[in-house]
Amino acid sequence: MEEIQIITPEELKKKLEQGEKLELVDVREEEEVAHGMIPGAKHLRMGDIPANLDYFDKEKEYIFICRSSARSGNVCYYLQEQGYKVRNMTGGMLAWQGEVK
Image (tube, rainbow, N blue to C red):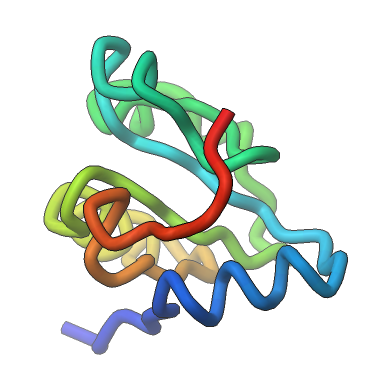
């Protein structure tokens, strides 16, 4: 199994502050995202990803986020096997120090 690329919360925050256009996908459950998401992230529950593969573009890179980075890591492995460019945010929202909406 190929290793998953990662991004730290600090690296992600810096990229967002510099105005980079990133594809962020939060895979947590409804009650979790109610406490706040990184601005600009799309919410797509982990369990809904297989049914929504048409949302993803193989030319783009997606950064996946969950509470602690375990679920988003699983999503990354799954999508990488399907040929998508993915990156997992280490530490998840527990480690995120930036803005939430």
